[in-house]
Length: 335
Ligand code: ATP
View 1: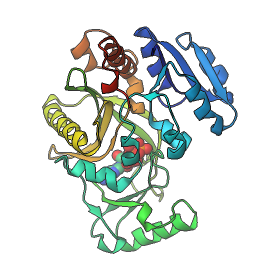
View 2: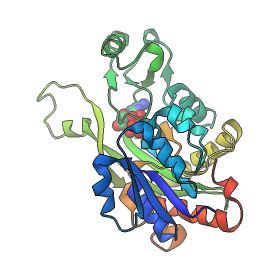
View 3: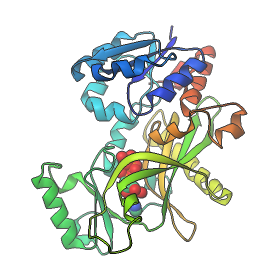
View 4: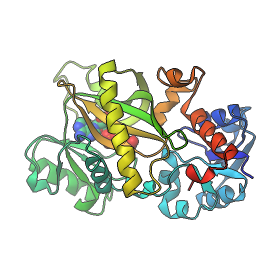
């Protein structure tokens, strides 16, 4: 029987395993030998399985037969889709969504067909008629992204990326209208057992150098903005924004049910820009726990409202898992 929760040592593993322990599970972490000591210091981690070579990681995961593996943003980024396909133990959530997340075009399609407001996408550099942001595939923490004011700058930037071997071709990038506003990343949990979408929290990513540029007087130096994530900042929204965000989230859940069976399970995030018209424009989603929930190891301003007890996202996952196991519904929360 399933009595253990495991995850890869990175991203949000600490709160995942801490939450699992609070819900009564045994816990294990699979990590690089370089991080072995770091994870050993936490008493809520029962077992640290260390690998020297990334190829050993999947064998270690599969050796944890009594475990459910909790995926997070580093799982696919670290192991690569091929290794992830070889994972035989149960994965919490919908493993079919990883492929959608890894492809920028499929990603935007899923948002668009959910009737969510998204930025305009331009198929070719030649179509660009406004300021755009050009993005690389995968959750690379914003590395390689650039802003461009016109089609020539888009073309030049893409050619540079190809030269630097960051991408193979133009097809690999997505060219998106740059929305002026402020970022707000809305985190949700879809409970398959309770059939409800819970708003969990909100964060803002702290990115260098874009967030540092405002510390300089305008025009002081001439540097290109970059978007490398170095941390997260908590936020709460004006309450009037919440019903809209929730409506988007529910509509997304319904759409994923239809297009990516068995549908959204557990944590996800709608990464958005809120404009001065009060519009929420969603420029991407994450179909699993996001690192921004690390802000709320002891619960968030919103999770408190549902639970009246400290409920981190990690703990929420294990609460759902525990209830599924107790009620013989493990297949509703794992794939
Ligand atoms: P990751 O994919 O690594 O999780 P992310 O979710 O933070 O990163 P990205 O899509 O990588 O989001 O965007 C990086 C940065 O670019 C963020 O600051 C985000 O606010 C900004 N950004 C992305 N798309 C747009 C857009 N269409 N308009 C305005 N800003 C955007």
